[in-house]
Amino acid sequence: MKNKIVKRPQSELHTVKSLKQKNLQLENRILRLENKLLKAETTVLKAEQQILKLQKENLEMRLELNFNESKLVKEAEEAALQYGKE
Image (cartoon, rainbow, N blue to C red):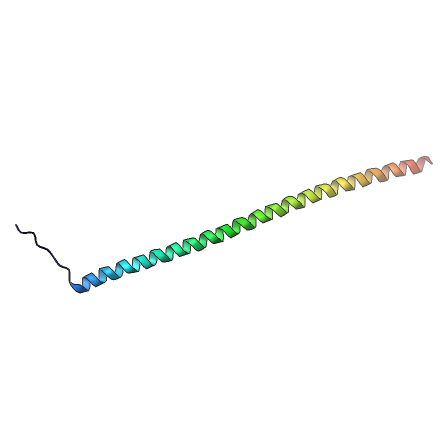
């Protein structure tokens, strides 16, 4: 038995080459889209981090405000008691 080298017709070779090139273009596009997605996710995470930072700051200020208000109420009550004694 002889091994025959089978040559593909030029049109078939062109089609294979075309499909390989198209696949590479699609893979490249997929990679670019995945890169955009990762950038968008990074932006979202940074925004969420900023939101959490602002929420923490807000809570700290509310805590300080509540503390100051309770201190003022206590001082006002003490002043009223002192005024009542006089």
